[in-house]
Every structure is written in structure tokens, then in C-alpha cells.
Image (cartoon, rainbow, N blue to C red; front, side, top):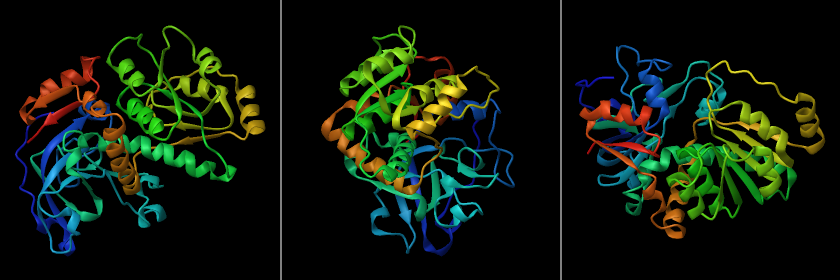
Length: 353
């Protein structure tokens, strides 16, 4: 990672008068940015020998083309979605997060520049407006959209059951995604247990409990015992990055339950599992397992609604996730240090503005 002077963006970079010029205020960073820096994945756009990283944007509109909707006029607070359409049938109907293409385009991740820069231009199609009340916490919209998509997929699939309404859920992992998923479920009236590695008390466990959810440490009890005490779980959302836990969850899922897998695990870890028991449980129990990645514009819109509701029902909670501000783009080495070594950091973010 390094600093680079890049061309100034302009509205003319987008055809049809649909361009939106945005001044970047904050950019959240996560494990994806760390892994790109370590060259685990990610590629520069065509014609460039660098990739501007950063996919969790938050900014203010500076200028807009003549065919941009009124909600994106100068002064509006905005977040840009991440994935852009490819060539599959799903991409052509606006479901690029469901693409079947082998090559995908994501701003700040793969083949498209991201938002760790002072300004960017984007087609209005991919820009989401936020109310002024979310100025301090709007940078959390992109990570929240990941949970929004996973939960929406579970509810969509379970429409097959006509009256499915989960009462108890387990969220595996208490990082940013796990915490925001716990929030989204609590806003839906679900009784939530967050299962994570570290022993309480610490900030993440307190944040879980402030939502009226239970926090359980894997260092103190097993997932099976947690299910016996707090379950059975109608919905399990896996966000730990530890793939064997997904199969433990599959074994413990309640009848008619939904297991949502959100971890991207690029290793070659292997695990011994009770495959007959899991298979039989899924067949006889009408259970479902679904993978989820990225998010659609509709998921971002749902995220805006939930951020507003969170500020009303749990005032001040979202701001507590913003633990680690980095002042300015030139302090990228400090940013990487927190991403790799600071176990107390919930959300690291760069104050670009």
C-alpha cells in the first residue's frame, strides 16, 4: 500500500448526465483491505498498475449531472454500493450480487477503483442517499448491508413455509458484521444469542448485551451447550471465518430452520463432521443452508431504514462501533497496524475529509 496522485474525477466520466461527484468524508476498512494489501486477492482496473482500495464509503455530493434524481443533489449525504454489473442474466436485471460470472467487478476490491481517495464519481444508479441524522454513523451502512442481504435471503427462502417467523437466532462471531447482524435481528424482534471466541466482559460483549441479546464465549462453552440453553435456533448467521463452525451449526439448526453462511474462507482447512446426522436432519427437518456475499441496492435501502431505527431504539449504540479513527489518507500504515494487531478495534475507519 502506498499513496498515489490520481486523476481528478469529473461528471463527464459517467455517460448520460447521470454522474454524481462525491467528496469522501469517511471510509471504513476491514479484513478485505488487509488481505488485498497482502496480495491474497484483488486486481487493478484495466490500464492501471494500482488499485485504489476501500469499499465502505461515506461522503457528500459536490455536484450532479442533469439527469440525477433530486435526492442526490449537492449537499446530500451518500454511500456507494460496491459491486457493478457483469454479463450474466442476473447482472442484467440489477442482481449483480447474484452474478454467475467468474470475473466480478467490485469497487475497491476487484477491477474497479475504490473510495480511499478524496473524491470519486459514480453513476447515480449505485449511489444511496442517507438522512442528515446518520452523518456520524453512515459509514456503517456497507457492512450492515451484508447482514441485510443474508437475513433477507433467509426470509425470502422461508416464505415457502407461509407462517415462518423466527423466534430465536444465533449469530456466530462478534466482529462488525456479527454485531450489526445482531442489531438487525433485534430490530425484527428476534431473541438473539451471539457466540464468539473471546471471554467477556469486553466492548463487543457489552455491545451485544446492550441490545438485549445474550453473549456466549466459545472458550467457556460449546455451541451445542449454547443451543441447549438458548435454542433451538430457527436462524443461524455464521460470520466467524472459521469454517468448521458452519457444520456444527448445521447439526444444531432447528427444524424448518435457516443457516446463513457469510464467511469467505479461502484456506484449505478440513474437518471431520457427522455427515449422516447432518444430512438426515436437513432432510427430515426441512432445513436450508444458504451462502450470501455482497449486497444489492435494495439491501442498502433496508440498511438505511435499520440505521434510522437503531438510532431511535438504541440511541448512541452505533457510534460505539466506531472505535478506531485514522486521521487522513497518509496514515495508511497506522490503519494497517490496527487492522492486523488491534484486537480491541471494532471498526477501523479513515477520516478522509
